[in-house]
Length: 172
Image 1 (tube, rainbow, N blue to C red):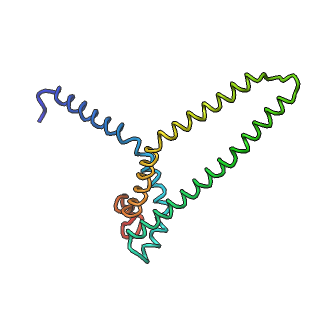
Image 2 (image 1 turned 120 degrees about the vertical axis):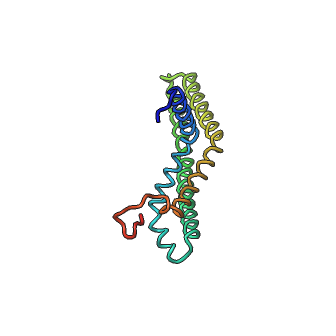
Image 3 (image 1 turned 180 degrees about the horizontal axis):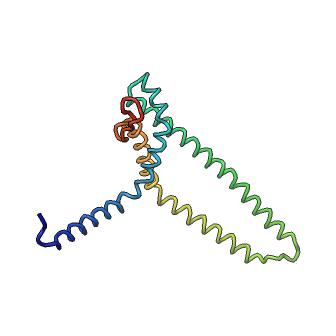
């Protein structure tokens, strides 16, 4: 049975396309933490299977998610600590260079040029820190989505994955 008016078909296709485009634009930013969470869950799944032999699956998924959170938090702490301890050495080097240039009687770089360069560096750092502070809520939300996806993929991963016919009993 053919439709009498093809304009309605084209209108339906356009509306469906616009709805799909809107969904893609709205949910695309969530794709990266979900994909990263799924990847980490796939790596941690053998550990989850071992823990599930001794405890409930939900407790195992929770424990592994907390261990992953603590491991990532400790790594971030050490990275920030190294960067902050190294920043003092950078400021010492800059101070040494400025003193060295000042000790040269006739400096090849005038003080105004050095002051302008330092002001530019400070302004750039301020802008970076402000943008970092503004993005903290988004980072917290993406972190929540990441660890939620790790937990859910550990807990319900085999139910979501396609069946692999090569595995015994059809389990992935």
